[in-house]
Image (cartoon, rainbow, N blue to C red; front, side, top):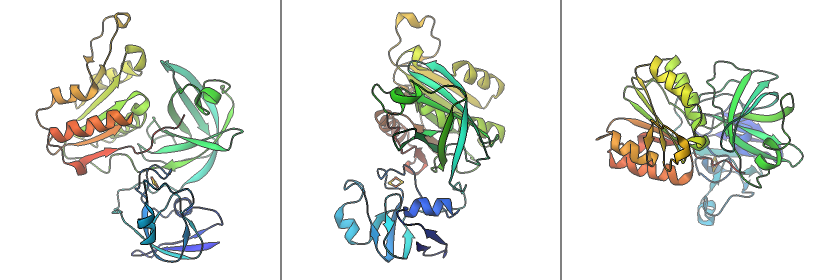
Length: 338
Ligand code: FES
């Protein structure tokens, strides 16, 4: 057991043998910046001012050896070898979600096919979980000792209920080998959460654009629902992209929401509609091109992006072309493993 002290605010927390700095911080209610918790995004970079860490499986691309030699470490990968004093490299303000990370058990109450190779999984938790719209959980894949990350799609109002949208990956350990194979209603699931810092930081003064590809819609659904309930944004534009009609889901849900809330606009888009898609009244084209067509300028607005990396990269480029400030473009950094 070691102790980690965060320089500046003096927060201190214990770290068990083999536990990472980030896991210990979040389980003890001490917030440290993070996003993917997989060593890929770099959000959790820390400066180790005093003490020694084992960098474990820290990827060289995220933290090169030269950075490690100057005392840098990834909080989600680094395991203390001694007591530590660390300094965060990202700004930690009062708006980040500070819910304590915990292990949970839950029962499957809904498991539905909602789109091509896409399922909605709803869990009833044994005990309460507080989370912020946009955060995610890690579901433990039974029998193989690995976890997979999925964003909550429901708003945080009911602390016992979690909704996830899961895309099947052929041959994927969690999807093909479990959720699309053996998993059934009434089965038990172990999970940990909440994690991540993706989501509306605070009440917004300007319009918000949300762009999702495939099951990247999940955290955006949670954010939209929560923001509408609490009147957090003057106007919201939700874009959901898919190739064909069978790739989109919750179209009726968002259409009705847009009718009920004049400040909420829903724009589903198909990049490759086929004749079987029937009478498609939504947009046609890459979702990012639809955004470019809709806005002459995005100056002063903010955006929340989640989906395949290529879509997110294209969306960032499109929004910058429309003069959105890079600091107002937020993206979910984890990519769901198969
Ligand atoms: Fe640690 Fe992403 S690299 S949270």
